[in-house]
Length: 202
Image (tube, rainbow, N blue to C red):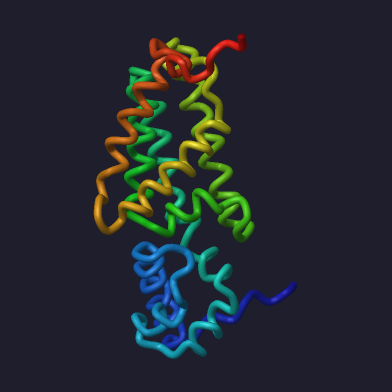
């Protein structure tokens, strides 16, 4: 029988825990491209110690992001439990974008997730599979416009990620105003195009 990985020494385990805490904080503040040196400094260890535990940026992200992305499951569960499918859908979007606004790493990961490490990609994919159930439930109830798809959600997440990033320092709640506009347009009773936006050919 193959032996399992050797347990870390107490001091090494403490350093790893400090690095995970620091990485969670720094990535949340600055996004996935945050300098690893800043993480090591906040953890109180050398950059060499960081690389001993996490040889690549992707390894460090894979250690913290899946747990953070698991919050999507809780938001989806709450949306599906709401007796009003439209309120569940709207609550799902608000919860999703609140997560993105509070954590720049999540904001980046939800846009880049399918090109990141396997564990992160799988967590992103699982979250969007659950989101499809929220979408289909609202459409089946006749409350969400029938032409809205999961791919449209991906586009919406990307667009909102830019609003959140641009307003991070000067207008951190600007995304809420944008969300109200999006929801008005997504309701089944809303017009499906802007008047005059696509004039008929002469």
